[in-house]
Image 1 (spheres, rainbow, N blue to C red):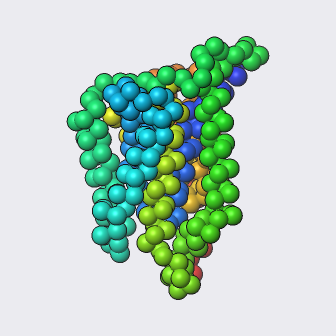
Image 2: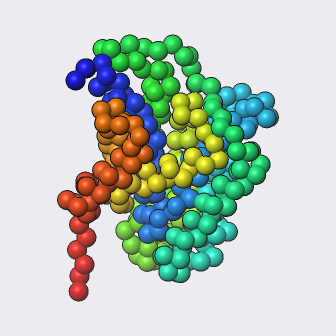
Length: 293
């Protein structure tokens, strides 16, 4: 096994796995607040990339202003989704709400296709294109941006949930909504905030990945599924597990594509997921639930 090739696959896996991890974080944040799986999460990732391209090219904004506008619009889309679609059906069967999120996913995808087209787009790299050599592996600057931004997002979320009043209120709602309501926490507001943060994190993932893999109206489907797989792999409801699950899937996917066959690249995530769940159904970092009777 050539060290340079191994490092190349590892770096590629960590790069794409970071986006899977951010997508999985979005699933986890909403699940903790509502106990619902939001299958529109992949579309938030897609919107981050597509809206950045739109604001950059069609409106003539600079790269970083375009990114800020795209992330802001996607965050607002998450708030609108919660207010107009999720809140009116509060108390409905969880399966029905999940089906509604699938419907929202299809609607967003169709809307973006209608207004922005079916073409594939790419953002320019954030800074520089000259590759770095690392023990025979090539590292492009955008990979460093992806890893750095992902780390800052994780640290920022940790500080938010552990140090701020809103973060602690969201954690309280994730443990017991009725008790949180009794002590004066607005559960509806926390649920809305969870959708906003989820859309924010997803859009950041879409923005940082677009310069490498490009983006189009339909990329959210596969990214959403792999993010969900990472969420389950790491342990549903565990933010650290979600991020770690994304990195694990990204690395194993890259190694599998490099050493086995790239034809099965997109299947590796789900093969790995099934294999892990046969051994530990609660996920790698999840804890088995004990039901009291």
